[in-house]
Every structure is written in structure tokens, then in C-alpha cells.
Amino acid sequence: MERKQLFSNVRRLVVKVGTNVLTTEEGNLDRKQIENLSADVSEFVKAKLEVVLVSSGAITAGKASLGLKARPKTIPEEQAAAAIGQTRLMHLYSECFGRNGLCVGQVLLTQADLRDRRRYLNARNTILTLLRAGVIPIVNENDTVAVDELYFGERFGDNDTLSALVTNLIEAGLLIILTDVDGLLSDEGLIEEVRKVSPAIESYAKKTKGDFGKGGMASKIKAAKIVTESGEKVVIANGGAPQVLRRVLDGDNVGTLFLPGKERIGGKKRWIAFTLQTRGNLTVDEGAKDALKVGKSLLPSGIKEIDGKFQTGDAVSIRDEAGREFARGLINYSSEEAGKIIGVKSGEIEAILGYKSYDEVIHRDNLVILS
Image (tube, helix red, strand yellow):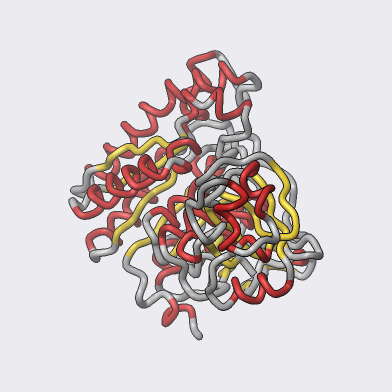
């Protein structure tokens, strides 16, 4: 299918713009680049497309006020720079979009916001309300309050991952990642199309970073994998190329296109599969694996082993006997309870535990097949 046809039904998209796209060689915000980006996004909105902008650049915008020439090296400096720079960045976006008759709204998120179901839905409702009002939501990680998340491994780590999770949050049909290279490169040059994010594709990622940003190509491929496995499309392209956003949606062969890997996954199952942190592993037999893949629930009789400490409602990884993860789900029993009932029939649960909350260890409505 040609790109133009593939993108013809896209009505909602996320545009992620990296720090290196928004900054000059000296490491300052590039006003002209932000003006051009705002003009291009405004053109989409006026054409009745819904656009969410995930923008880096806050730390870069604030570092000079702290007397720093390079990216901060300590957490307090990074957070202080973000606190200063976020207001400057938003002021510039507000000014540039205002020239095109549009308003912007700031949305700051942490991993904790998206892993809590109620806060996740609140964030979704806020962004969708802004879009319905014709406002441009500008999303960034809330760096100024993310110290605890950093220590416990709960930061997004880069805005590439954040952009993928926001794409899933609002069920956008396309994620465009703008960077400072033409796309995913192999030894032979630009890879125009990727049908599946395989280990071979991941091996092309250059583990190099710009002077001012966090992410590299590896994080962009990770983001593409999250979105395509949810059933949506991704393009990684050079944000410095003239009218690159318009050319992408017009179907020009710019950047690298990552094709959807499977049928679209519903919003709740995207949350389970890609946003939640798994707290344990379940190993199941081949019969249970086959049953899950045709839409059945996971019963205790199919579980051979459990690993990890988890509570009722936590996300767990489901693996086959070879140790390969093929599904994730929300579990109905704690690890202590599950350890007592593995391998038994559902009718025996009450006799073993003294109660039975569910026949299923994981109900099919709370289970996602990954591969």
C-alpha cells in the first residue's frame, strides 16, 4: 500500500520533536525552527486534523540561567533547568501558535500518572478535551517532580517513549518522530520501510546521543515498536527538512515508515501491554498458551510456575515453557495465593484458599497477546 493511501484515514496524530531539532549548534533554542514547526502543525489543525505535540527542549531552554553551557549533569540542576526552561519554551510556543490563531495547552506527565488507571483516564480526557476545543496540547515529562520516579526506574527516560505512550493514550493513528537524521540508517543508507521491529532492525540503532538531548535511535525504535504493536503507524524523519510534516502526510518517501504489526489493540489493552510495569512472571503449559491465543482466559490448571511478588490487580508477564514472553495481563490473585493454586482446577480454589474470588487467574478481558 502506498504511503498516501496508508495515511489517508489519519485524523489524529502525535508529533514528537527532539531537543536537537529545536536547538542551534550553540545549544540555544532555535526560534526560527519553532516558528516553522508551529506553522506546519497549525496548517494540519486548520485542515481538521487533531495534533498533539510532544516537545523536548525545556532543559536546554533553562540551562543558561544556571550558568551551564552543556546539559546538566546532576538531578537538581536538571530539574531546576526544566523549571526555568519549561515556562520559556511554552511562552515561545504560545507566541508562535498565536500568530496562526491557535492556542496551546501544557500537559506535564510522569510514569506514575500513566500507570494509575484513574490518572491515565484523566490525562486522556484532558488531552481529548483540548483537541475538541481546537487547542494544541504540548506534552512533556514533568522533570521537576520526577526524582522518586528516577530512583525507582519510573521515569520515561526520554520523550520518544513518552510520545509512544501518548499515542496509545489517545489512540492516535500516526506518530511522527522528528530528529536530526533522515531516519533509520543501515550500512547501505536510509531504510524507507520497516514491516517488523526485529532484532536485525534494532541492531541498526546508533547508540550515540546529541549534545543536548537524552534519546538516541535505540529509544526511537523502542517507541516505534510500542506503537506498531498496538496497530498504528510511525515515521521517523529529519525535523530540519523543509515542510517535513506536510510531506509525510502527503505520502512522500521521506524518513523511515514503520508499518503496523497487527490489528489495532483497544485502549485498555494498550495500557496493560505497554504502560504498566510487570511485577511477576507466570509460566504456562502449551495447552494454556494455545487457549490464550484463541481468546480464552488463563485458568490455574495451565500454570506451571510463578516468579516474583505481586498483588491482586498487578500486571504480570506470561511466558511459555521456553521462557518466551507472549502475553501480559492483570492478575486476579496475589503471588502468595497464586502459588497455592497453580496446576489445580478452578473448582478446587475455594477448598485450598478458603474462598474463591474468580475462576480465572487472568480474565481474557484483562489479557493481551503480544506475539
